[in-house]
Image 1 (tube, helix red, strand yellow):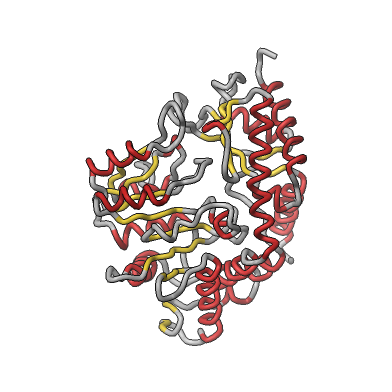
Image 2 (cartoon, rainbow, N blue to C red):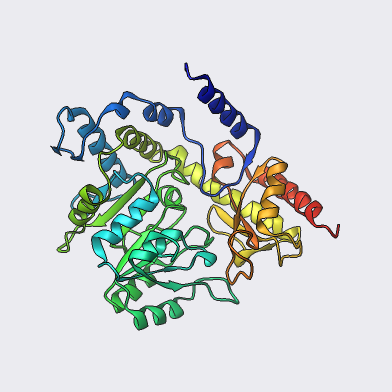
Length: 395
């Protein structure tokens, strides 16, 4: 690369990534094949529209790229074109979720999603997000005693507020979602059921998490977390008399985006093929084993794990009330100084603000990609414990 300044920064980031223990639950490491697709000549092609229906010429090749990505997305999750449509053009998860609401919820309508401090995402209707400014959020959360989803309470909120759309799927909830119960709740108030499986899509693909497709109307996902692909997103929509796929396509283009990023779509296609292999199934199983080993060891060392453990790739530690007296930001800073990268996280019923919340979130996907097993995560837990103990001013 002739641009030495940017080349130096790229090299520095590559070195940083190799030198740390990465426990960011939203991150992973892509293959060389994914990187090759991202850096290909496909980035040069502009082509608003969809395969066979572009507003630009010269799209024969990129049409096939997009068709391949669509087919691989459906095949990976055991779906058919007759039953489901899939849009592979969203640039990332936030615009994907926004597009769904724009397609299916009237402006000012109600979107029911988990509140941010309990484990929801900004784009599930949070007031600080555009999704909360254009639509009205009906929030739900976890039970205070169990720190689990209380489906009866969620049903009560839904039947009282009658949202147009209900979001199931979270950024920090560590347990299995009962999609059937969410379907029953959605049917009671005639709501669309959208599952945001961004965090656990790779676990669904690997057979380690129940599939939402038997119950959902819409399924969105990013591709860069447990799915181990590039920064991008997918929107699956059920084919029926409501013509959801057509509405979603129009919301993406011309509603929200312009020309697709074909290099990104190609990279997604590569990642989807990788996720269909037996080795990926083994990877997904190891991700869950590693997260449980991390949570179990931290509990043995005296840390309070929110929700009491994990069934997925992530967990949250209460660093404030769990006996350490450290805010989430301070805990994350101390861990980073020691080469362990995590993110601070608000907790259910958090009394501290989102800038410096009461906990941190940890994930196992990235380090599992690097080949780590349970014993390695037990060692990581012990290192995390030592760092947080040293961070407590009373010790």
